[in-house]
Every structure is written in C-alpha cells, then in structure tokens.
Image (cartoon, rainbow, N blue to C red; front, side, top):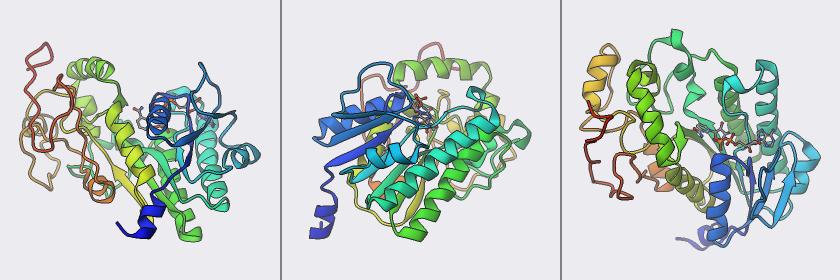
Length: 309
Ligand SMILES: NC(=O)c1ccc[n+]([C@@H]2O[C@H](COP(=O)([O-])OP(=O)(O)OC[C@H]3O[C@@H](n4cnc5c(N)ncnc54)[C@H](O)[C@@H]3O)[C@@H](O)[C@H]2O)c1
C-alpha cells in the first residue's frame, strides 16, 4: 500500500443516511466496532442510535445534510423508500432521487472522499417488471439491458446516473452497490420457503439474495478501500434462494435465456466480479450453511430440510 493509499484509508468519520433501517443499523454498529465515528441521519429513529452524532432529518434537506457532513470523510447513503408499494409513485420517486442527488452534491461540496450508495438489483428494472419476461442473459452483471416499469427501479437507475454525473463533474469517487434481497439468515430462510411456492417469480432476479452480514462487509470495504471513479457493482450470496443446482433451475424456468458463463453446482446468477476486483469482496454467508461463513472455494451444503426438492 502506498503512503497516499494509507492516508486515504484512514477514515475517521462516516455519515450514514437511513441509519435507522435494516442495513443502516448493522452498518453503524460495524463502523463503530471498527473505531470509526459515525454521524447517523434518518427520517426517524424507532430506538436510540449508538452514533455520537444523530440527526433526525430528510436526506433531501440541503441544510440538514450540510450540517450532517461536518468532519465527514466518507458517506454511506442508504436512505430510501425501499419498495414501490410503500409510496405513491410521484412521492416515492421524488423522495428517493432528490435525497440521493442532495447527498451527492453536498458531499462533493464538502470535500467528502467517496460516497457509497445503496442501489438495488432492481436498477435494471426486470425483477419488478413481469412483462419483461426475463433478463437478457445470465449471470446478471452491470451491463445488463434495462427494462423498467416501476418508480422504485427507476429511482435506483437515476441514483446510479446521478453518482456517475457527480464523479465526472467533481472527481469525488462513488460506488453504487446493487443489493439483492438482503436480510438476516432467519428471515431469508422464510423468504426461501415462499420462493419455493413460485420459483418462476424470482427467476427475473436470478433467485438472488445477500446475508445482512455480507451487506455490512461490502459496505465496510467500500468505506475503507481507496478507489477513484464511479462504479456500479452487483453483490450476491454464494448460491441462490432455491436449494437446487442452478443449471437445473435455468433449464426449468429460463430455458431460452442465454447463459454467458458456465454455471456450476449451486453458483449464483449474479456476477459479483466488479465487487471482488474493486473491493476484494466475496460473500461468505449462505443460508444453506448454518455453521457460519464458508471459504471462497467451499460449496454450500445441499439442503436437507423442507425446502429441498
Ligand atoms: N434490504 C433489501 O433487501 C434491499 C435490497 C436492495 C436495495 N436496498 C436498498 O438499501 C437501502 C437500505 O435498505 P433497508 O432494507 O435498510 O431499508 P429500510 O427501510 O429498513 O431503511 C431505510 C431507512 O431510510 C430512512 N429514510 C427513507 N427515506 C429517507 C429520507 N428521504 N431521508 C432520511 N431517511 C430516510 C427510513 O426512515 C429508514 O430508516 C435502501 O436504499 C434500499 O433501497 C435494500
């Protein structure tokens, strides 16, 4: 590591927006564990935040975000309405894209080194667009063609464009992480059970998921890793929500979709190579491996419980 990289890696304070949310709370805890001071911002806090600076505010409020950015080196922007059913289209779209645009532009003005923002697997639109049929190909990567039919997916696509714009215009680094369905292992197991009732419905997102611990890991790496430019990166668990060989799933539910890379065993249908190359991130938690993290080369155990087919 060069001297400038070492200095850049010395992150003292991080602003986390959406700090009261599922991912936000876990990220705040992890950063504090790393000895990094946290400024927590959220529309509301259901319970007290452990951060030493806490702002109850809208991330779309310019003054509030400017105040929140005091002494901040890196921003983790998670604040968003996370599903199209949770708001009217205009309200939801306006809230998400104006919050992201505000956080990005204010961060650049305050000399923040990089903004890590939550995008979504939905940014390419197909997962929430039943009429789209299927992704253009598998595994899904950052170049997959978009086909958007809902405001939430559109807001995430716009957020990615806003991030690229701010990097071009100011040089501030940005990384938009396309999270798939992300939750604790217990809740993901419940999701996996419901996916089994209708596996075809989740085909459009490649039956993907991410353990919350891996979500925290990728954010933590993006906070600590010096990088330049603007990036969009997919992340995924090391397997799928369905306990079957992936090629079998494709043969049954997506036989006409081109597969651009060999898919072996239970491999995921999300290409996480940008996250691996940029941040050294590889997901380590599988819902099918109850005994904790698995090594890079390990194959998750075949499910023997009720979800097995
Ligand atoms: N959890 C997932 O499965 C998943 C998948 C893909 C993407 N994401 C994205 O990750 C991020 C975090 O998701 P989550 O699951 O923790 O969601 P969450 O709903 O649990 O948390 C979001 C938090 O953001 C806050 N918030 C919303 N709009 C705000 C605003 N304008 N200003 C300030 N605070 C605001 C909410 O009050 C909430 O505390 C979101 O951007 C979401 O779209 C999540």
